[in-house]
Length: 146
Image 1: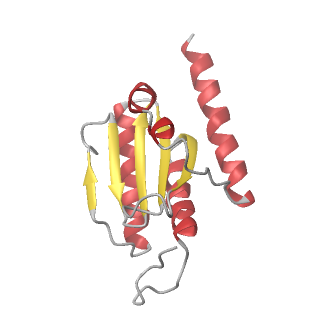
Image 2: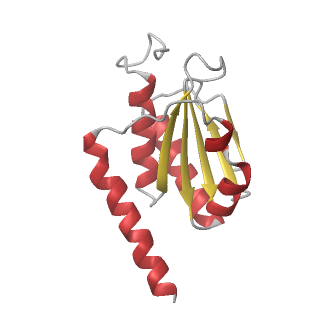
Image 3: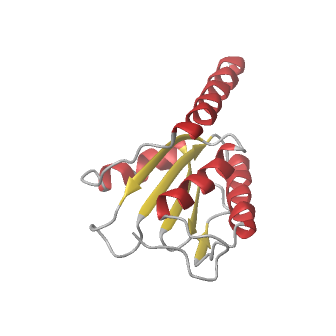
């Protein structure tokens, strides 16, 4: 597993980095997070972090929260795509690539299916309440739409 560069204030694993970025996404109500471990399957990255958002506005908000948090942690960003378009934002942090999708776009591209042989990582117990809270909030909002 790749580590952050030595000039970082602390050495963390790629999975820890993914969880830091997930926490930022959850702060803007991202839902359905999946962490796909790609170590040994590709040289592109160690992890895909995939989350969903309900609208183009929310895709942008989630992406901006992740970008800001990554900047605060001094994670080098190699690329960002689609942030302003709002269907799919891709944020490449080298060892972690964050995908933020609207649900129909996520289903269409089916990265989870494309990487079906890759293991899914479980999230740290400290993240589970935030993941569940985001899911419950989404259910409430969907119910209120009817």
